[in-house]
Length: 356
Length: 136
Ligand SMILES: [Fe+2]
Ligand SMILES: [Fe+2]
Image (tube, rainbow over all chains, first blue to last red; front, side, top):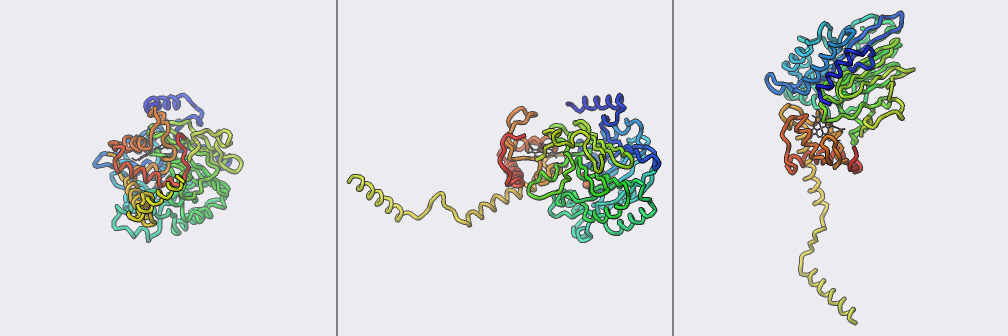
């Protein structure tokens, strides 16, 4: 199917369908417990990796992904209360890339953006330009009865930060996913202290949503699908009845449940990543719960990319993944964990979901 | 009688050749040889790894961005039918396809040393996987 006809089909769907599960866009709809909050929605976009080639020239493929997401958010009805950006707006943390990203994102009409920083935005100038132009690195806010916390989860060991001859080299090293010279992501103690303080005033029954770039659990260290001090962060979240972590970085459909915490990955608008299980030289811990997205087709540039869609029913997450070039998927909270509404039963799974 | 004569003649001829020529046989090699050949191979793998993590096309995109550790390239399944190419394709066809499309570059000659290096890297990262030609 061509890009054009797909787009037309999409716009038609948006125009004619009220059923949210059919709308292929990243819309997060929250329906908390009756007494605690009102129903609302937010959208999110992540991992656009806008890449400067030179001057004002940027990699078209990745520009196209973000532009498409922005266009689709503008068509959302009802309008989302805000948009979350999940990090990795830039590829090599350059001012030109961040500026370009802000310009494309400014196409969003009449919605606030809540920004999460990714490693590709951070490791050139350690978040300097980001903080000047885009957002604070960690902060919290309350929205209609839900407490949101944004973390900067892509910090790392000081020794690693200091071992490179230049900022550009450091950025390049961190930008390589399969880098044997890499270093694991961390939230680090000062920020965990901040988190502890921030949560002090929050009641156990208040739904908490944490927004981070890296998954706040451990999947595969060699690719940094990993947060080194994840357990410490999880410990701070343990006393709450309902906790949801939304993260970027992994560029794939992924969900998990650890104790009281539900985890959902956001899709990338730029490119999909293979599941770590497909790299057969090393062990990984991809959650068994996740029914994988369809294997991507290299002949369709937008395949395997997109954005997500969540509604939180009584404080639990139902996540609708809007997958370009694929039917959308809904992962809903059932009993004690997220489950795919259609494919969780192994007998219902389809051949493209087998990755090897 | 005749048989006996024949055998001793053969033995004589064989023995004289063996004594006259140095003991070189095409199929004999030493541990040192094995080491050297492995090192030659590994140097091509290393070259392939470098290429795979560089920008082979015009748009500042590297192969590793979508295939960390060469994953999702499935060298053990080639040759196989690629419906979009409408033919049974080789790994090298697909390497070129990705150079031309996601990386927006010029295809390599199929026997280009760079092509061979990339192939060596991808197969090395997939070592131990059973051959499964044709598998999609
Ligand atoms: Fe990313
Ligand atoms: Fe990332």
